[in-house]
Image 1: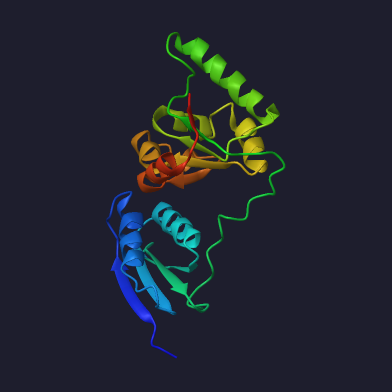
Image 2 (image 1 turned 45 degrees about the vertical axis):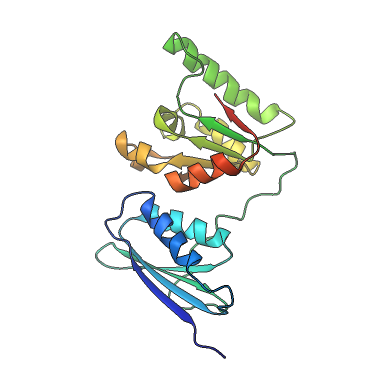
Length: 212
């Protein structure tokens, strides 16, 4: 059996989306014939761990996570065998079975719907989100950026509606940079913290993008 390919990445103090970008570069550097791969990634925040884990799993790698006393993290990303260096990070691919066709992406960059009066915009957004689960065709993914992230926080009146959408298998992605900018990361109540690499990738590869 050939020796495994071993790569060490220190991505501490790297801002979004660099942890995912650098991990992707490591994947691209691999010889396609490499049967066994071990990539160790050092990170210093949980959001980066979640983003790198989700990306690695989407590329069919196995991920385990170790948390250190100084609140840094080590992800061990493997291919070809199961690595037992730490507890396996939860998979983000275990979504409920979808009963209805979902073949588009919904992009929400505002807590209001449309331009004009803000109060009216909030009423319209509330009505739209409540109507969405009743439609025959649901989005595969909803992306929240800029002030749209306010809809996903604990103070939002739309949380129950968004949780219902997530229950149908809809993937809710919330911009981590936007949450940091508005100091809302600790108030996130639904969805997964995402990064600009993942958002840009989805926007460019999805055939149908609906923007509110």
